[in-house]
Length: 125
Image 1: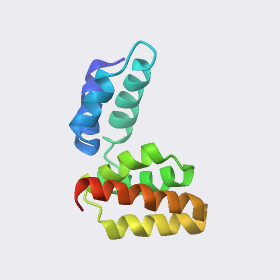
Image 2: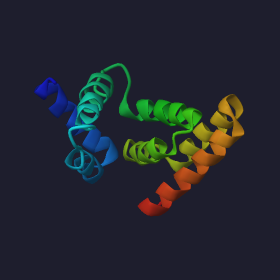
Image 3: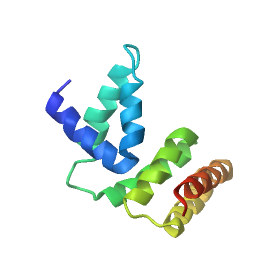
Image 4: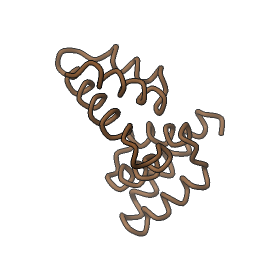
C-alpha cells in the first residue's frame, strides 16, 4: 500500500461518503477485510475519483447508473448520499433511475427509487 495515495483517497472518500461512515468502515476492518479497505481507498477513491478528467458530480451520475444497473442496494445507498454531497438534486437522481429502468430493467430501477427515498428521508430532503 502506498500511504500517500491511501491518505489522498481517504480524504476524497470522506468528502463524498461522509467522514463518520468512512471512519467506521476503517475502524471496524480486521485482518480479513482491511486489505479491501486499503485497495478501494487507494485505487478507487484516489486513482479514479481524483483524476482530473471528470468532476465529482459527473462521477456520481455514472456511479448511480452503474450501481443501480448492478442492483447493489447497499452501495447504491452510499452513493445516493455521495451524489447529494456532490451537488446532484433529487430530480437528477430520479432521471438517472428512470433511464436505468429503460436500459437495465424496471426491477433494478424500482429498488433504486426505494433506496434513494430512504436516503432522502435520513438526510431530511
